[in-house]
Structure formats: structure tokens, C-alpha cells
Length: 82
Image (cartoon, rainbow, N blue to C red; front, side, top):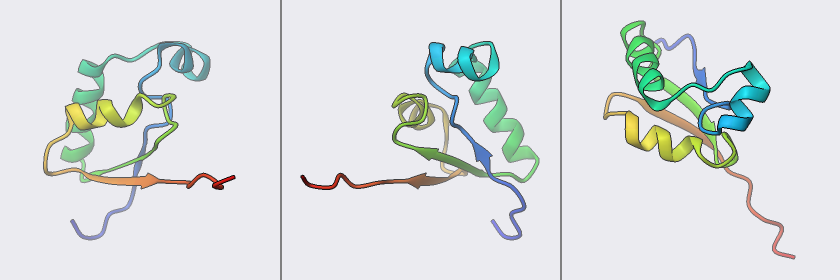
């Protein structure tokens, strides 16, 4: 996976309400799986996510729909401990 030129953001994946607020509609897992397959065929094998994307539903969806040929870029912010 060399010379990667783009990363697919997944901020709106997962939550019906969040998807409607951001895009005006909800996209189900079947469509997301087809999109991932298309991204891979175009040489875009990286999905960017975070634990609060979707809110909180994106990462489990990605875990269900991806295979070994997709890289995941994820962000993590630790709690302050207070």
C-alpha cells in the first residue's frame, strides 16, 4: 500500500440521527460495504475513524464490513483522569 493519495473519513457512519443531520439521510451497512469495496478498487484503502464517530457506532460497523485489505486510522483522546 504505497503512494496512498487519499483517506476516507467515516465521521457520519453509524448513527441514523447523526447521518440525517450531517447529510440529510442515513446510509446503511450494505451501502457502506459497497463504498469500501469501491474505495479499495480505486486504490484508497484507508478509513479514518474515531471512537465518537457516528456517535460511537462507526468503529463497530467498520469492524463488521472490512476485510484484511483495509487500513484503519483512528484517533484516541484519553480521559483527563480527574
